[in-house]
Amino acid sequence: MKKVLTIAGSDSSGGAGIQADLKTFSAHRVFGMSVITAVTAQNTQGVFAVQDMTPEIIASQLDAIFTDIEVDAVKIGMVSQIETIKVIAEKLKQYKPKQVVVDPVMVSKSGFDLLSPDAKEALIKELIPLATVITPNLPEAEVITGRKITTIEEMKEAATQIHSLGAKNVLVKGGHLEGEATDICFNGEEFTSFNSARINTINTHGTGCTLSSAITSNLANELELIEAIREAKNYITLAIQHSFSIGKGVGPVHHFYSLYEKAGVQHV
Image 1 (tube, rainbow, N blue to C red):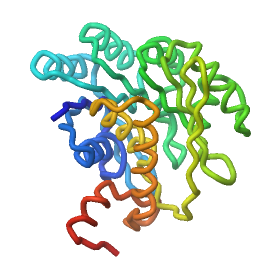
Image 2 (cartoon, rainbow, N blue to C red; image 1 turned 90 degrees about the horizontal axis):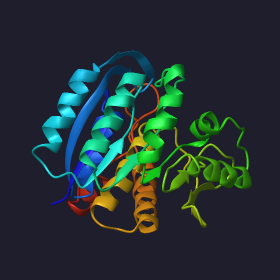
Image 3 (cartoon, one colour; image 1 turned 45 degrees about the vertical axis):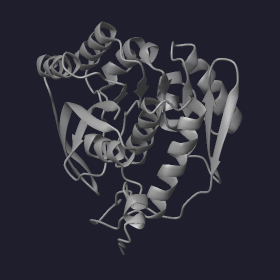
Image 4 (cartoon, helix red, strand yellow; image 1 turned 30 degrees about the vertical axis):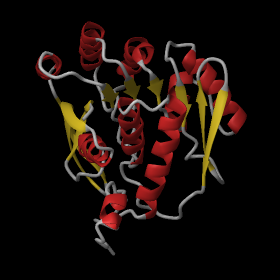
């Protein structure tokens, strides 16, 4: 069994963050581990408070994992502070994991800033160059590039610009565009489009975390990047189609739908 590490924040409602990552890892038959960067107080209606972990405890968690267990792939999610970003980059350079997926979590769906404004440059300088693939949505790509993105052509231009910052591959997610949900991947030489139908539901809590974790799992399981993304897109589409109406706001996706279906378990 492959071993996969998530470095991210905790979501107390279980729909996003490390909780979504670990569920996704399990659904993809990889052994999941976690380094917690922050604890959030959040639910389906929003994020209400964040307590960041100290750089020292983040470093200790990373050392504990890497000095004992072989890590086949790493997913990086919420990293809100400059010192958090620096210590993660330092440890990844030290331990050199084979695959690194960076999901540049910046703002929650409810509008809560999950990346401090002064940490943006640190993320760009320290983490993007370490990425096998970085997976920004359109608002995140706009922050990284400093440009407005409203068309597929502008997504390609943004992907090219982000690639120039050092990432081996860039996946710009088009879920915020009108019409069909189209993602654009750029490897430095060519573009690949991934198209999927837009699903009419508000229950999309944790989609970004889940997609990036699915890609990470697939890379750990030795799929080539394009196939890893394609399979991850299929997985998140099913998870959104069968999402849960839990709570009073934006409900979570169903990480184990396929497994439950095979077992004959139905949820309404």
